[in-house]
Length: 250
Length: 359
Image 1 (cartoon, rainbow over the protein chains, first blue to last red):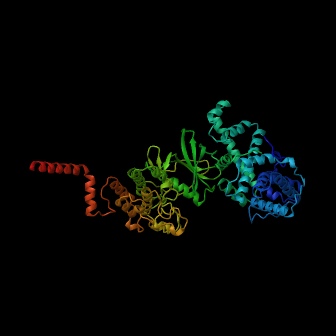
Image 2: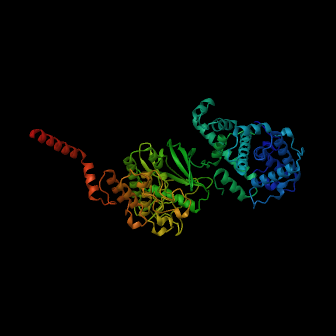
Image 3: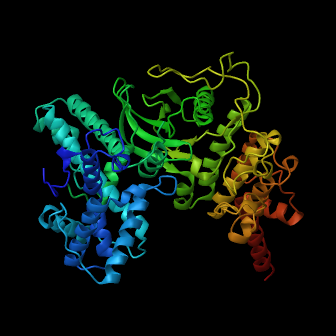
């Protein structure tokens, strides 16, 4: 698997996935707090970079610096301490923090190139830039909607990484391989058939069907776990699940 | 981290949004449609080797009003065995608590799509007549649909007409032949499945006065006012009239695309002939009679409307329109065109014969 970032990364995720990284980011325990912030950064850096490029019309290099400066600031000062889940979703709060930071940065006309645990080479800005070029932006640009879409892209990408790790660790790589071939094709379900996969991997069609169903089920579970991780309260989790998947969480 | 294109992103989102069917025998193939109450999926029944459609409630609370309503919908459809009403195969609860029911997968197009592609008015009227027959059957079993509109009527691959989405249907009365003493809307426990036929009874209705359910522009005035106790078969007749309006004009009646509450019902702002002058006065009269604001002025039942549509297709006089002498003569001439032609030809020949014989 390609690794874009060494911050957090799929193996170093906040350990208790059913709990909220947003809450843990306020923990008195420095280890827990650091893990939580890394989890947040892993999910948010790419949407943040693209957002800076598009909304703030920053050049490639400026956007890289600003993204790193922002996350360095996060690790140093932890602005998420002040998050109140009663007022807005964490995603909205994050975007406001980012906007505020950028406004201050531009006002002071400074680019503070601080390391602070986020090295320049650790984030795959080239990959983010390639995505930006490929996916583009619509003419009726809505900053909130754009940031949300990129955040979803980041969330589902991380979920895919976790899916791979989970199946690899349990020696069930075939589940992920089938899922990758069938569902991550550019035209989902269009080119690859269950029968062709069965022939290719010497499986029965029933086995292909069952493995794919299991992989999809696991993927859904991971997405919900990640969503829970990135929300502060059950209510916010429910709202995000409704918005992302159109489902109600009991 | 993987790079996801927009199309992959949407596909993965739909996968993550799919409910967990692991506790059932069904396998999900894909999403078909989304509605207010739930999502309809295309699925496979591996035991019987057939494709089906599964409607899943989008809230995982099996004791909620919505869950009870969905169970009731399945029960209502299950007791209506008619070729024009999509059959229900199964009802149950998923592992996450979401209620679902499985039904026949209908391939084809919606009536509004069909109407736009079909030039022949008589073809449209025949489909409409078939839909009216299905509704009349439901009425005969004490059920009113309450959400009839072109989008809820499907034309199958072989031209069959199916009335869909009985989600807000109302039982007008208990029917001895189709009910028993089971508790209405009782949800089956997780993992337990079975046909819902003959389960539930009573009016199956917990909508209270003032509650507005239906679709703007297609619902009867009394329905739009939330006068639940006044709803009867004639409320569906109004909606059928509104469907006929669409079939005649290719346009929805007034208020159908509006979010303005005052526009939820009204007489159509434009009469069908104002939108399409080719429409006959009789067809317009049938449509407007069905859409009369007062229930007493409408057709008293869908059966009566079926008979009226049959007369319209056969070019017979309709009850909704009293013809004057010119219209009656015109109808006689148009129906006896060949005879009139023969008589005229004979008279012309006689005339020339007399003219030439005098010379």
